Length: 253
Image (tube, rainbow, N blue to C red; front, side, top):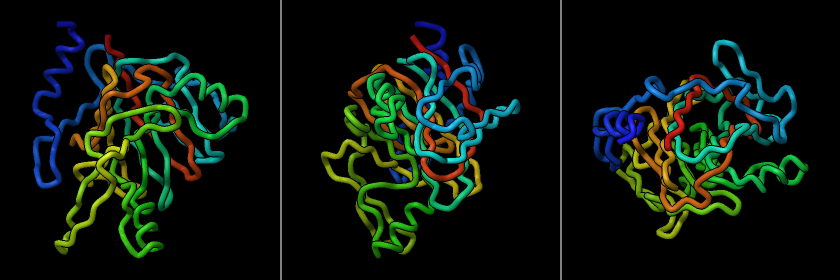
């Protein structure tokens, strides 16, 4: 077995896919070990943001103003990878995301001024306030998104969601359902996101067309049969300031 894959198997051997009622040891993979490296400003290319939208500091902190809506992309396309990143929203109800396997043709359209976000697999980065605002405005919980690590295809991309529909139980015992049986959006099995101003940790594994997301140490969502299963990695600016740090990648065979 390849040394990188052997290391991956050992590091993940105790981290199963969890139901909302279960608990297990957390898998805080921090991006250290053979093959891991930091992603810096030199790894990214402009697409459709302004020159001051993104700031990369020497400390590894990445600042995004959120304006305009758009992305930056990796200079090279990636196929099989692991990614770790920490993030925190700086305003209530902030929205952002990490795009995997962004389709080159969609990137070209954005660079030509057509559209705002690419086609690919989005790992959503959403503040708790987004969900709160929805419930206040609609008088009921969201039935199509959460703020806890949804994973879904955008544009012409495709994915078979692990959890296309899920029922959550509130502290008062009441229940509500998010999604539909045939949805391509994967909803998290646990609700673990920290609110505005607090750091969150994502570990993303994307191998052979399958994506899995760990939020703050617990695997919660993902999908398989992703098409495409190669493309650009993108960071998203979507209207609200956000900070990232500890962005590290390990490319796999």
